Image (cartoon, rainbow, N blue to C red; front, top):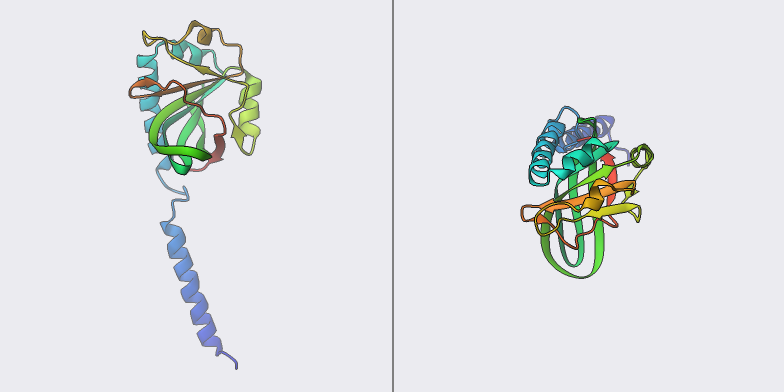
Length: 189
């Protein structure tokens, strides 16, 4: 049986129109203010970090670049994961946007939210991060933890690791929190 050509064209046009409508509803970043919202959140996160932990300002000054992740939401019930978006800044200016995602399996239950910053101490570490298709935090990262007085450890200021990770939240730094296995991918907000 042959379908009349007008019916086929009409079906095609209706299908194409529906697809365009659905695609327009997706946040693909073209013409959106997603970057502006991420930058506003990054500014607030950076300001909180610098005011709460003043040592991080000098760490940022000596870094080749800093990735700020304002909010990571981590949840699990046997199988879990985490997700967040942020911005990479070089000399204080946003150069790229990234998402962080992690999947976990094992005994876990609950939810957690935190922020973090990755300080790329060396230009080589920053270049590796920017040129990878999906970068993961590895053994080359040093975690900065606060002492009981709320100060970052002295080792942080003289870090020799190529990447320093600072994990923090409303209650201060999260002891035992890790970013291992988190994959960072460049996005267009």
